[in-house]
Amino acid sequence: MDTKLFARIGAGAFVAAALTMTMLDLREEPGSPPPQSITLFEPDGDPLPGQLKACAAMGELALSSPDCRAAWAEKRRRFLGIEGDGWREPPSAEGDANAPVTDQPPATKAN
Image (tube, rainbow, N blue to C red; front, side, top):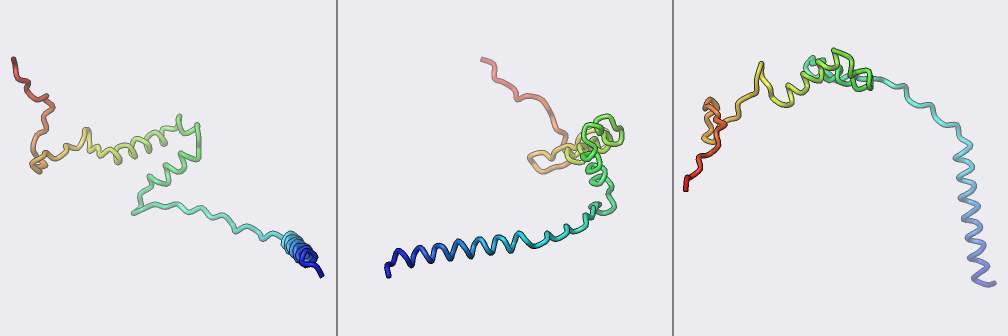
């Protein structure tokens, strides 16, 4: 017998096996998806992450919600480090956290 004939028989057997496995896989019933459970993560009893998630789910309606606006303001306040009515003072270069911060430009030399 010729080697081409063996190669053709082998290829045909491979295709037949692949088709059989595909048909058996398609015959099986798909499994039911697991039930969805929603878990709210509130670290240390902080309700802000849950409120921000609810606002995100509201979409454009959240723009007119005073609760969502308050939650976003609180998130900004925490992120930016705003304390009370103003900003936190950055520590000076010497490491003194209580040193005043000046906003004056450096003096220029007159020619």
